Amino acid sequence: MAQIQSRLTHFPVSFFSTVMGMAGFSIAIAKAESIYDLDPRVSLALSIITLLLFLSLTVIYSLKFLQDKKAVIKELHHPIKISFFPTISISLLLLSICMLHNYADFANVLWILGTSLHLGFTLYVMNAWINHDYFDINHMNPAWFIPIVGNILVPIAGVPLGYTDVSWFFFSIGIVFWPVLLTIIYYRVIFHPALPGKLVPTFFILIAPPAVGFLSYIQLNGDLDNFARVLYFSAVFFTLLVFTQFSKFSKLQFFLSWWAYSFPLAAVSIATFRMYEITQNSLYSIFAVILLAILTAFISMLIIKTFNAIFDKQICVEE
Image: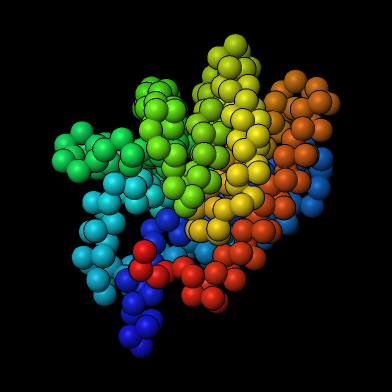
């Protein structure tokens, strides 16, 4: 019993990044099903599994809060872990996208909960950044994008649900602060010591803001204009950039942060499918299928490694 309580105390909020990865994968599969007229039951099953995963993690983290509030408060004040709390609200937003076409009313509830919670998390995290007395430049890493990416994500389900002005509000927050954080991150990685191995996979998060930004901007603007192209091709460039670091990533020990690979890859896959839908250029179709195949391989690997780490008691232990 003491061992179970100890593992619960060290259950990390970053575990919700698994929901982001699985939800992104579900949405990418759904997009492929729509374009190529495939059986939609696969994406629906993945969406339900992802919802159950989210509910399970929510119950476990709630038990952690009830058992050891100090551990949760410690994470809320941690210079790195604080950025992972918005994975909870982002998970709700992604689940609303997953459920949008089959369960619109349920998607609406998830979207309202997700946007409300994410606004709270964004304000909390940004206040912590502004009023801190313990951050330094070495704490900066791509995970700091997570609170920002959630804002950019809002219009994808928000516009179809009829919340256009609210969607513009959240999109504006994300699109303004994305280049600010990008500048700081490049300053950090160029002029200061390298990121610790545990955080190296977060470099994949660089892909997410422009890829998600492209999808949201298309929803809001309704057309593929020059700004949309800038967002999409920025995402493609960041994808190529992180893949040039593959030899470094392949040597890393497995951490839960490896799930940082999943959602950004899903985002650029979905964005590429959307480019094919709009342009009907077969090159985008080929690229999207390749990205989806890579994403599928990554998700499969992450699931296996995560279960192995859980059974080997390498996760939910004191750092």
